[in-house]
Figure 1 (spheres, rainbow, N blue to C red):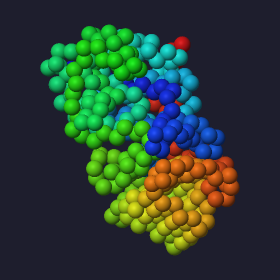
Figure 2 (cartoon, rainbow, N blue to C red; figure 1 turned 60 degrees about the horizontal axis):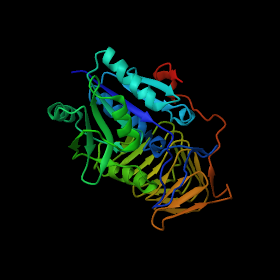
Figure 3 (cartoon, rainbow, N blue to C red; figure 1 turned 120 degrees about the vertical axis):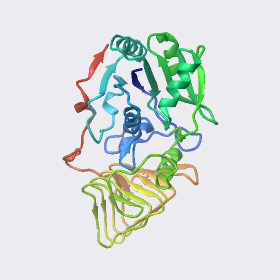
Figure 4 (tube, rainbow, N blue to C red; figure 1 turned 45 degrees about the horizontal axis):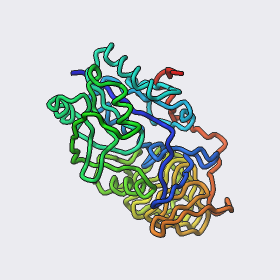
Length: 338
């Protein structure tokens, strides 16, 4: 039995705080909007973490099917993956069918299929055996709350139109259901972004912060600049090339993602500061998510845009890509489907 995996990356933007839609820039310096699965959490995007989970399940290959309108939004991967193929498509439905055909021609019997949305941990081998026993062409993963955007299919037996309906229209034609007991985070809101970080710190899921655990519960990624008078209270994470200045305090499951700047005297408590953000002096950031000049207060369920970039704003860095950062490009030469 040979297993492959397909990650469908569409154009949908994320939901927001509570029930209202909110647009969070992937890069605050240029307001590029992207799904939450593209946002860096503890040093790595959920998109890359799902690729890692698929590869760990002995998938022979992982195909990233990317809508051509979304290609410029793709996050940088921390490393290259020889078994990952990038397919840029104007028509994702057509790309799914062509990928299944290619899998059949190359001897891949089964394919895991997921959208770039939720973070889902699953015993993929157990899922495969359940699927084989069900004798259905499609099996959808569910948990105790809802359906999960993860399927396994027989490459030779499934009708591409049925799989497309399942992925895009939530219509499962004669599919079986597999109950997953492992960790699932829907990443439907910024509260879910915070929850994933908190759950990782507390060992409730398999996500681990990138970088080095310099002391129990404190992770520091490469080239982070931490002032000797800054206080980092476990659990906490300081991302790549981020700077925390004198008398700053980072505490209570807070994450400072890559290329951020936390200025003099500021306290970040139970919060996430997303990549390339600047937080000014003598601020108290609590129970929030910061992205550039936007602050999302999760307790009050409000979003604020701060016009003064000396308070909150993008952390403008002349060289936006630091040495050692790896984009998706080295994965493979992208195949473009019109």
